[in-house]
Amino acid sequence: MKVTLLGHSMGGVVARLAITDLPNLIDIIMTMSTPHALPPVTLSKDMDTIYDALAAQVYNASSPLLFSICGGTADTQIASDACVIPPSSITNDDGLTIFTTGMPGAWTGVEHQTMVWCHQVRWRVARTLLGMTSTGNRQDKLAVAEEWLLGSKPAMNTRMDGDVRRIPVTSPSMSIRISGDYDTASPVRWCREEGDCQIVKAEVTTLPAPNNPQAPFPLPGEGIRPDEKVAAVVVDLHTSTGYLEIYAGNQQQITSGAFHKHLVTGKSWSELCSRSVLTSGAGENDLANTHLNIRFSKASTSSLVVHRLNLDLQACKGELQTVDHI
Image 1: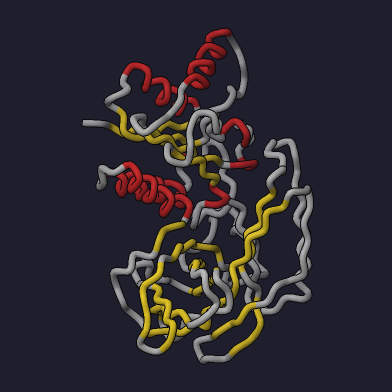
Image 2: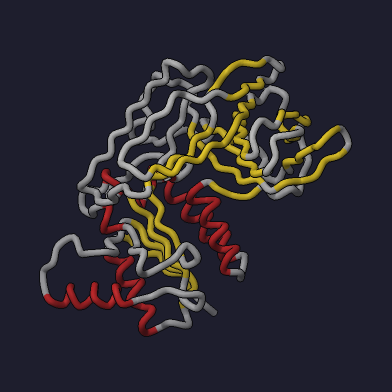
């Protein structure tokens, strides 16, 4: 029988060192505010020895899954860089580094000690661990972690509740934003024409959507309320014809448009606001923003480097814009 180890701060380092003596007894290691890359303070040669041992660890299919939850700049004891699991140690098949700023329901930095009692974080960690213990498959455990810690999961295609909503296909990659609670067990169907439909693969991500855009975000000391969210459904079709069918309540507002991906090879990027079609519950049409995925191939990742994002939304219409750093 294998066990799961959960460690806070240097407790996460101790959990990783346990692999050396108990390699076949540990299934999952989850750390919170743990300095993986370097110690916060080097007090002795023993600390160097410990981190040399961590650097020598290489995770593979027979190793425990390793997850690191980081509080970001709100954690004044652990630098953001130090909390990230070094890429030389793990791949995406062996674990994840998650910042609380990208964790659904939290969406904010978390201080070092607060990490262990912040409700939004504790609830998702507990739900993740319970979900992973119910499956023995390594990839399924990773999928559970991505769902609860990153808010990303595939549509399950097992239920057909709600009204059928039709969305015209305008691009080979489509992004659909659905207000309120969206049942990820509902299928997404692509129809070439009436009666000629098939279920297609879709990825669902949860994004924040404050009810009051004038209020501070996140609410100080609270994160965000559970009902203030939208679902972003992304579908790759490889065609711009036909229409999509999804199952959602008649009062849920749906925004649809092209999903654009941009690979930036330089250090800056700019583009005028793109447009998409907004379909409201009443069937009216308007203009709104589409979904942009921008990746900087040469961006520096040091916590000592500040990246500036300037948004000019005067040319954009529609719902509140959301920037998701992943």
